[in-house]
Length: 70
Image (cartoon, rainbow, N blue to C red; front, top):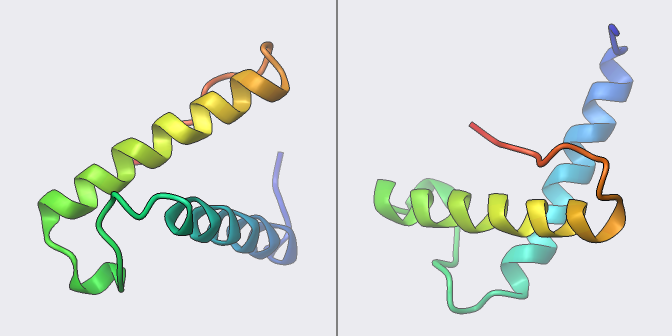
């Protein structure tokens, strides 16, 4: 299904807001500007965010596929 540019930008905005909330709630993870983090720190963040999103999807609707970010 083709999404309009506005719909895609809205989804990106929601994802960024979700990520910001996740990062604020996890002070144990690398913090700060994403551009200033090392590759290893970014890998840690991505893995933990994927785990968080998979858990959230499991909690809301077990029939939903687990989200993956690459």
